[in-house]
Length: 253
Image (cartoon, rainbow, N blue to C red):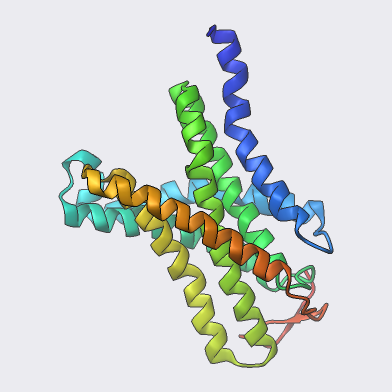
């Protein structure tokens, strides 16, 4: 295949899975969210890439083996790196963007909305990350594998994040702050665990973890789609002026 054709195909392969998943999640919303808001969240996801890199460098100063090549890490180091050095940093940064912009936004008037917000933030990061990997390597094979695994993986993590944020919002409306906080914590912890398992299986050189990876991916996709459908069918309407559960002030934007 000529370089000219490859240079045309690679950006398409990198962007297409992101666009398709965004459209799939968006079309399940009964009352569509403002495009301006979704573009803002997607852009914040791209910005999150830079925050993740900066944060990773800072944390690596305190955990020296994070500077090692993955092949040179022992099993313990690989677990810590997968779950903290990659998964937690990425998911926490995405969570911050989703929470600050989406959780108390006046447009968040249906519980499904926060899943859309979470997915758009996550896929903003996945889009930029995908471009760097696919265009950097110049590999169509890599682009296809990431389209089937990495990008949907980011989306699935985001669906679980949004799912628990939606439950937290329901509890906040019932003025049950304890249950709200528990689900806010879950909205960080669960995606981090899922992301960490994904990365550990990919990074590990043991064949058994590669087999477990494909089983994990199938279960993850099925569960994520089930959660997506479950929340999209909830018809609870949220008040247009959201009250922040921590400061009791009205949030209009």
